[in-house]
Image 1 (cartoon, rainbow over the protein chains, first blue to last red):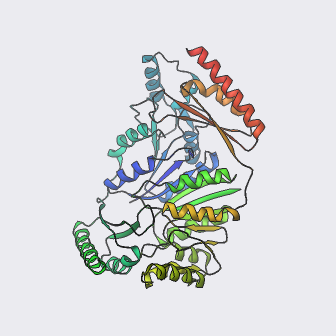
Image 2: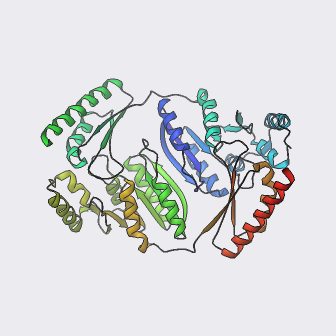
Image 3: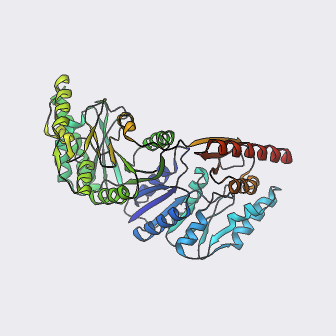
Length: 239
Length: 239
């Protein structure tokens, strides 16, 4: 199963949506294959969507579905699928009710948020009513993290789960240059386990995380034991 | 001027390299056009590099140049450019000296970090000696933020600067649905200013940031005045 997330660039802020989606897909057994952050330009968004939606099982986009002139995701999705963008009766009704209850004017800018590509199904937004939508294998979410997260949760039932990818992290104080060779051997031994080695933030000798990932529980545990043994015996050598 | 950064996926951690590179490019007047985060697979990295390096002025990669088996960026860059990956004499000498001074064994895993695509120039690493490199328009940096940042700083003199992109942010408490129409008009009026509107994190009515970006100082200031006037008059209407 393959997944790509397309993320509309904000540039100004530290993104947190990627991390949320990555963690949640992992727990669903869905592999996140690629993330792209692109500019708010019509042709760029359209071309990116068209490249990714044929290549991967699912595409998730975040951002660009609000009421302002720079919110162009819905029209880009419609263009990518070559369908019209129309006011969706149910989306309009939901927004109308939301604004009426709060005594807020339902003006033409807010009505823009009811425009949905023809053929798409709505994704509920319990925070601020303006819906996301699903067009074939493309899920279009808001960019505001709280809204994006509830939209994602609302779509989980529609996603085909894979075998869960489990991961185990072994943290140690050995230099990468010492771990490298035995770790490479272990990677050769455990083909169904993906072994990654990540230095700490400082880049000094310090802490190294060895991350084991696999869909095969038994082999993951064997690899874990082997890595722990290897680390223990190396620590004995060094200290 | 166009820029893309290719980022080798770590998945486990909240990325901060993107933010650093984005801010620094902006201050150099270089436009960051796209970010891609991809898996540590040879063909994926190679294809991504080849797509981006013809499309953009510069490509920056982060991560995957350490001593362990999952550090495959250097060999992927060599493959993408169809050149050999060879131990670089200067890189080897730098590493040999670094390890000798610290009484650390310069083993075969550590020697891997001296392998550089033929034709590339080295990028100094003042933190832990293992160099990055520049191959034509592709800059290959370490993934550890502290090292990546010093490598970036070491390359600034090689980058062709553009006219500086300045930005001004106007924060207000008006709902996006109220701002949308007048803001759209202002965007039409100021063609050389890029006007973006971003809701706060909560997604509730709350704070909205209107961000103005331009290389034209005079027009940016005019747009700023116009946005402030618009916000003030709308606030008068609402309160």
